[in-house]
Amino acid sequence: MKRVVITGIGVTAPSGCDLESFWDSLITGRNIFAESRDLPGSGILVGAIDAGKKFDGLPLHSLSPCDRNGILAVSAAQSALRHAGLDGAFENPERVAVVIGNGFGGVVCRDSEYERLYKENRRNAHPFTVVRVMASSSASWISLAFGTRGPSFVTSSAGASATQAIGTAAQLVRSGAADIAVTGGTEAPLSIGITLAWATSGIMSRRKCAPFSRYRDGILISEGAAILILESDEHASRRGAVPLAEIGGFASNVDGIGIGEPTASGMARAMCAAIADAGLCTGDISYVSAHGTGTRASDCHESEALRMVFGDRPPPVSSIKGTTGHTLGASGAIQAVATILAMARSIAPPTANFEEVDPDCNIDVIPNHPRAMPISVALSNSFALGGLNASLVIKQVHWADARPRRPDYTKNSLITQRKSGCTDTPTTPVLALRSGCLARAGQSPGESRRSWFAQRRDRRGGKRRHFCMPRSQYKRACAASIFAVWRESRATSAWRPGACKIRRPSHTTTLRKSGAVLGFTTCRRTAFAQKRRGVGLSMSPCCPCRLSGGGLHRQQQVR
Image (cartoon, rainbow, N blue to C red):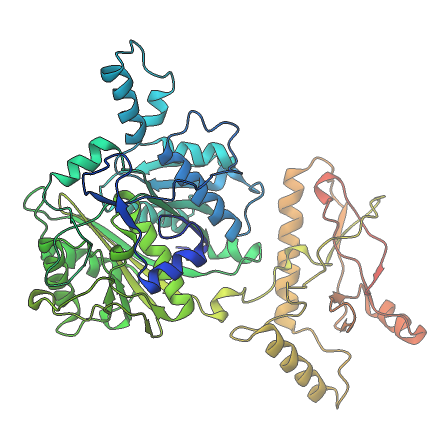
């Protein structure tokens, strides 16, 4: 099974439409709630994105068929792809999946169409009504906007939708069914009908959302979207991406005794299963991003479930819904983004609006002020109506895990071809990483380079010009080269028996200070001759155009 890493995140929410403003809102507890613009005088508080926010520059030719639900999803996806360095075309779109969590679909469009039909007595609806209101449209719009060709679908599980979407996408990448997954959640529930429905349900607050506080009185709904870019660790290393975090484990279940009556045992089973899926134990969890909606029953049940899993002293817990509101189908993705930012900064966001400890929620909820603390493994919970439980384990990626443990030898200078007029200079030097040196596991590029020179100095008696290539490394390089020749010969008709050969590389290389390029010489005789003439060592890397009949290059000097 492959490891699944997160290489990009994006958020579009009332608390911030970029990562920095979003994080500032989390740690300061900025109030984003105001009276509903569609229901003036009602006193119903909601979290809405600023009315002046313009969603310009989205990769859609026309936004007219797209509901607000889809616009928020595409905006967050664009930010996440840019953050991951994938804002251009995908190398293999058939290997890119899109899995989005959504609870209600296009309810804003639905309300406007009902108003046209029943209030204005129109005889016909808008021709794009169907594609606007269907819940699956958010995944479809992302696929159309960014040209993905892999699996694309929506998970709809109320407040657990986004967490289930992320877990499902991680399973696709882990199993090898996809190399990249664009996943997360989106929700635009602030239509008149849905807002009034939540207000009359008896679980919506009239003042503020105060999770785990003694005098809490309900949730506050808001709109928003968050997207994560998941990749297999091999794919991320191959393209030079630096992972932000890793999806360690995921679990989901249902254990409700009623449509609105969750149970602590079901929540505890989901958390335990996710931790076991990550191959960890409960003592490894250093922080919990709680579902924490601010309702009486849900917060009590979650607190009890945490004590069932972790004992009398659970790890620090916080809920961000006092700041972001309950974004329903997008809440799990917004929590995941907040958790990744907290890991990167080693700061746990606070539980905003906390007033007094509830005896039934006697856990450490990080009240009102952020806490500086190392977060190596975090648990993110989403518990929805109907007893739908989902938990996600997010792990910190250390430097040794974020870099490839050895370079890719499939594009080295061991492969040469005969009879070619191709003279293009390769764009990527042989065995040269982004840092310009061969980084060792667990070291930064600077530390690796210094230790590398020191070892060569010791071996050569103070000289640091050459070093020897290990025999095991040489064998792996030859094997990888032979396999690459065979694989690519199957894909091109320009190959014929005897058209390729393997050259034994020299055991001496050089690293010139000016270019910081690591190159192999083509043979020992050439290296010796060049050394006598005082010419820098040269290399003959494989042509990047070999699929179209590339061949043997003239030797290029290392500059």
